[in-house]
Length: 335
Image (tube, rainbow, N blue to C red; front, side):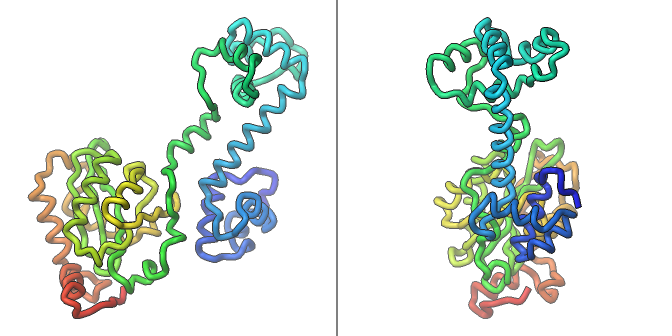
């Protein structure tokens, strides 16, 4: 067992997936080659309820705790703290201080500090004259500072997400139509994209032309595409953690469609969309520049997809299945 190392982000995501699948701590621990107590301690230290554990929140909490632990070093070493404060008052940068102290105290290993720890110490100081005096020498004064890893991780987060684990059971069983999965197919050089929306029960597909792939453009284009669908068949949309869906709350306000987010690096949680994207690539291979593709060509590909027999529909077409629902000839379909 790898007990002496801290859990990493990938392991936390594996724990989150295991909890979502209702696995025991022991089963999850065997898969990630950790002790059961490590998994149990990780979950209960990060949340009060097992089902509420989220990998991204747990990892962010760990990074912030790690930063707080590093700050203690200056508080416990008086000589080092006085040295750092004196140089900050001379308007030295934390990086200059961290390197110079090694030269001034070559034989004293206790007089060692990283520039990041100095930054963290400064930002953790209470407001007052001392903090203002020490911060004055910094080239850029910010309200907060995190490690590079924490900053990168935080940038990837979408605010106020609703996890796929909170999705109603009817979505997973595919018996009730109106639940969709969404994604972008990225074009040549990652400069263009095509939006894809797939209904989970009938596999009806909407292809959405995009002028840009930013959050504002995607939100408006997806909302416009859903206007073609009767309101009783617009219940939810499951998406990945792509930043293009960061305006999901506005999207829900505009369309009344609730957006759920799959766990990070879990494409199988949106398997219908992933499989459909493979079919779409037959019409638009990798390297396609969607800025040069006419809307008529996109609509023709959409028509072909929806009139193509599918094995999972017992070789009916998505269009046939969808219109059966509209005409109320069939209400529940078996995936």
